[in-house]
Length: 357
Ligand code: ZN
Ligand code: ZN
Image 1 (cartoon, rainbow, N blue to C red):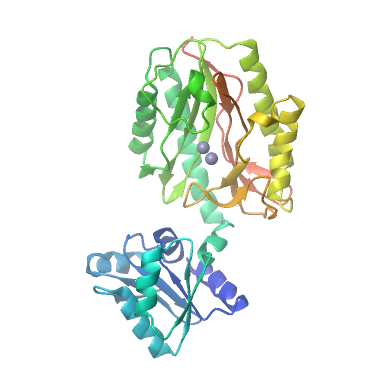
Image 2 (cartoon, rainbow, N blue to C red):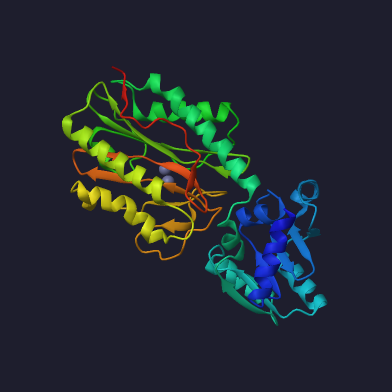
């Protein structure tokens, strides 16, 4: 954790911020190690304070070393105000992307005399670049997810309900250490596979269906995200063409993405290949997203984002083609951006796969 606090303080000093308050539990855990769900974190040039309540005091002591733990009682905001007064600090940034409007008003009232600025979270900015330990944690959770994909293949056959496929995936992941799923699983078969977010429903898999499986879990605080598309029993010529086009688009992006290129350029790498196949208009979402303590985090890898990719970012590469009323195909891997290319953490096969034959 220590490196994180130093990086945060150097960011605060660049931005001339005397005190930063964090209320998002994901950022509190990232900066302090504390995984309780109530409390806030105050960081100044010299100090670090974790405000929580009676229910979490013991846990806070066990989980965090670098922060002074303060019993916030019924209102942490008033305790924060008292401490700032004691330290002679009259300005504070808060996380604009987490506080509710109501929470902001209550806090502002408690912190009279302090100038509160709501800014995009400084912690979210730090979280863009993953440390070596974080990359290892992501590697482990991606590996578990690859194992789940292997596990599920024998279950995939005509007559099986999408929802049961999702449940079996979840049982496997939880039985092998996942603390939670990282989002509601997509198991979308047949015409439903053309829905980019077709969460598992009551439809039964049928012969000739494309099935998009998009799932992931949380292990040691880090999320995975994997998509594969398989075919039940057989596939049509059109399904094969579309599958191969999506695969070629993903391979092109994986081969060319590296530190220093813009998110929009990364997105174009895959989109251009789909355009060559006349399929670009059916790729209606961005190429990918950052992945870490949350399943969707910065950077957003899409045509509209000019931010440059940096070494140490972990992103998904997930082109897809969705032919409404017919079928859809998506493939998604998780990669670490490096100076000269990417390190692909996902190992699951991506040759065209026929199941339940
Ligand atoms: Zn996904
Ligand atoms: Zn994703």
